Length: 110
Image (cartoon, rainbow, N blue to C red; front, side):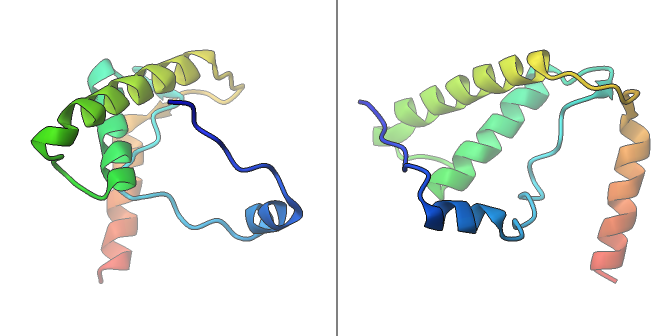
């Protein structure tokens, strides 16, 4: 099956220039951490992405193979992306970022 992606039309460009909605809170940034993201973290992010796209947490038996294939394919692409990205910034500390996220969450739900 070959996917057809929309061409970049003026309307598409206009929509992409508008303020973008926040990323799904369940998908965590994985780039530029010390130690680097593990295969399990990349797989979990891919799983969350496929769940979001499909609108289901657990696929039916009929769709299970397609669902699992998508998770593996996205995890592979994500690992390739993370390996190819470069930055001049020092690696972020996981515990420090977790503390910041906890503080943001406390403010949001206060």
